[in-house]
View 1 (cartoon, chains in turn brown, cyan):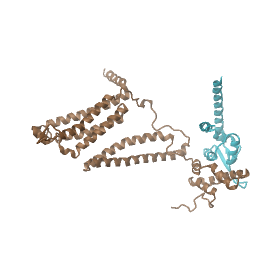
View 2 (cartoon, helix red, strand yellow):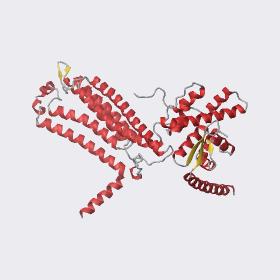
View 3 (cartoon, one colour):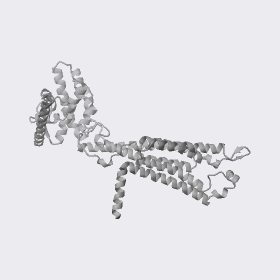
View 4 (cartoon, helix red, strand yellow):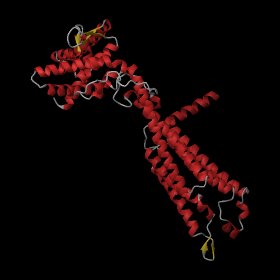
Length: 352
Length: 111
């Protein structure tokens, strides 16, 4: 707005040395410019003189003197006390920690929320997944950018008071008790992986099998067990979920033990699978009415019938148990069986 | 000297520039002449390290400066302040202790 036409320190001539000095000065606070300008010019002039005395021409000497001083931006950073990095070693660990935490918290929430919003507003499954992935990428980029930006600002503002080589403890102090356990062979075995994968292959196979070769036929055409109208959304949804669950089982096996994150992801997948199943059963939408008519079973699984409610409750119970089980295993893998026994003994002792 | 030896050597020398400046500037001197003096004394420092360093030490109160405009070319003379003298004494003590320790270790290795 009120910037002068000729800011402090800008040379009025345009020699090579003027250009160099201005390249240094323009990124230095105006208050410091005049003094640095004067000193830098005297220094360059001294260097040029001594090179001319040694037999160089004026032009050669100027060029050599400037090359000796090096990149003007680097020199300016030195004068201004600015570090030549975005996030330095003092802040780097806090930066990585915060960024990891933010990504782990925000992305799953946004992904699930976007997916559900799309599905509830009637977007087809493929579009819902694609839309959610698109939003996730843009949210992830924003998170990375703004976190880096904030740390960059802290680095710049703090550097002046700390000095470039200052040392500081991390915001999160190191605690030896918080070290994660080494994944030992006694964690998730190959057996668990195979059992999970067999089940997860069985589900889609069963879904396709009941569609095309049911035990019940009408005029030679199979009558599926599951209501075929569910193919519009819920059956593809469950098929997609088995792929996700299979990927999760492999990750779990590779990690070798239950961690907090894995427990959370497992709970998410379990809830995503269980809630629709329980709801479909409890409201009597799961089984094909034609299939039921064949046996006259309709009233046993109708909405609100004891059969439907009991089945739904049993499935909800099994899912809840699988989540609790993963939490217990995660606790054990962190504190070990010994810790658990010690806690038990302490509880017993307090009761006596 | 190989490249990695050179890097190690620079790592070892880092920090000696401050002590050398504080000791050298017990007699007032300007930037370019100090660079030459240090180089002759066997402590070569790059100009783009030394000139910002002098300003940093000045802003930390370890050096004081004065413009000399008597000659045709005005020059900024730096001089070690009382605080600078105190720091130099501490660093020099450190330096001598380190030298004694390193000497002792290296004699043990040889015997």
